[in-house]
Length: 89
Image 1: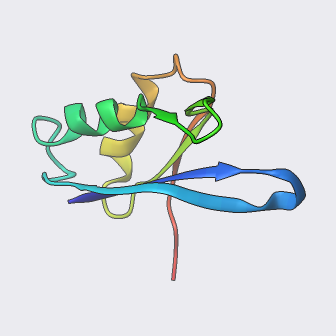
Image 2: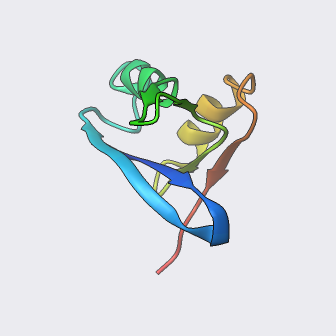
């Protein structure tokens, strides 16, 4: 299972979550869920004023699957910013 939070940033470092989704699949297996994750990261959001928001960057927490996430990110470097990351407690 992968969770995807789409956040937009405004003046004064204000942030708004504009979408949240969970994508089923095994993060250790590139045959499950990564295509759906790729589509989610390419999504365009229409907002009330008529503007369209597109992703300007993505950070993916690799957790226990750092190598798999790094492969996913490296194969998609067409995005402005794609960073694999690992959080610690």
